[in-house]
Image (cartoon, rainbow, N blue to C red; front, top):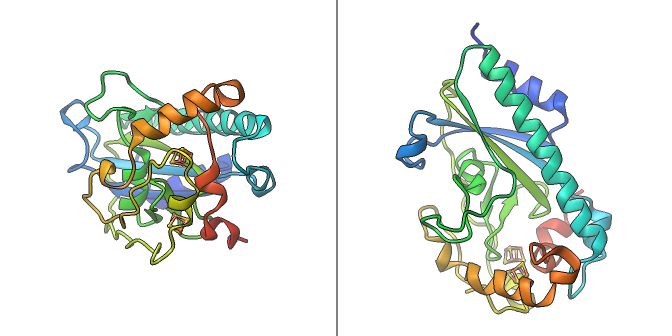
Length: 228
Ligand code: SF4
Ligand code: SF4
């Protein structure tokens, strides 16, 4: 049975997503995933109250919140995948949080959620290496469903709106951020030293968030603070 992009978006909003976007990722997926040329990006906004508590380290509450939101996103993308499959389309869920040890790009999963989100025109990549949503800033978590349902998208990519700001670069205790302004096609390593970030979290925050969360560069971002 055919389904339109509008029907799909309404279905996803009803499931509880904060925002939804569609993009053509045919040039961004590797050979293993090339049969899924379109991406559905779903996002959940994090709690401002919980992020506000982060100062020079993550909090136990933030770690719990991070895991709850990831779990919720995995439920959302599972439901979307099942919905599409019932309608006769192929669909593939990308885990909300995934780091594959032998991935081509270290500290990454099968497909970067950020790629789908920026191609959908939902925001840009900040100097903190995070996806910055145009309305909510960096305090969001992303999920992705790849599919062969044709979702026509202009792939209108936003330019970085970081400008002269470098609050996250100055706040990073791991000195992991280069300060470079992101533009489409740029390697992640030009913006962030993912190894330095991960090593710092593992050395300093293992007792709080098993070395997988920090949140400092989310907290300080003016785009988060300005979000209503
Ligand atoms: S998560 Fe923490 S350590 Fe990693 S880049 Fe952000 S501020 Fe630096
Ligand atoms: S803190 Fe400033 S430089 Fe860093 S992501 Fe936010 S706006 Fe960009």
